[in-house]
Length: 231
Ligand SMILES: *Cc1c(COP(=O)(O)O)cnc(C)c1O
Image (cartoon, rainbow, N blue to C red):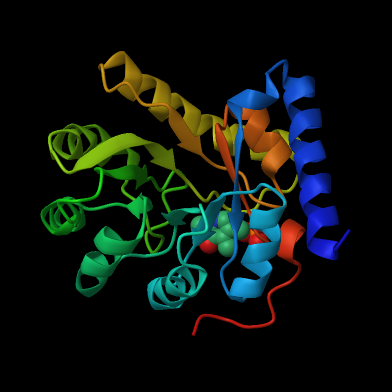
């Protein structure tokens, strides 16, 4: 087995163990392999190992990789910041956009989603810590944004995505993730029918699963440390 295959297996075992500890079924938690900064060859390895859901942060890097891999059966999730001048690329090349945090961006994605593709699957990124400089909509503004995005015909609102601050211990990490879970549950009581709570990364996936994550986004623990920063 290659290192990446080994790592992937170890991550799947961590997910299974965390589900068991939380009294949840492993089928309730999907794995997104975050391949940012890694070449198409690394992505081919995870695809060969049956891992089809892939996350990318840097849109131009991702579009080049998607083109290089062709129709390899991958599902591509945009998880990085989306500027207005990048919405056309996201709408044309990705299956999911998880980092939507403004109505203007959602409207552009809706208008630019090519007619031959199914609706773009969307998560709203929410800033549960309240850090003023962080990406993500403030929890107070979330309900209105969610209702507005849910009206857009070429988008399908699936849930929420969060990147909480690093926490000092498991209990603190669970408490941070529980905030996103509470927002998610509240939107569902308002009838939005959301099925995706995207939270948990290499360092905190156990706490995220404990708090109710349905999708963990794992880069380092699968592909190794990133030596290259944003292009
Ligand atoms: C890079 C990144 C990840 C993966 O982080 P790791 O710590 O490498 O697992 C997950 N989500 C987002 C939004 C990221 O930018």
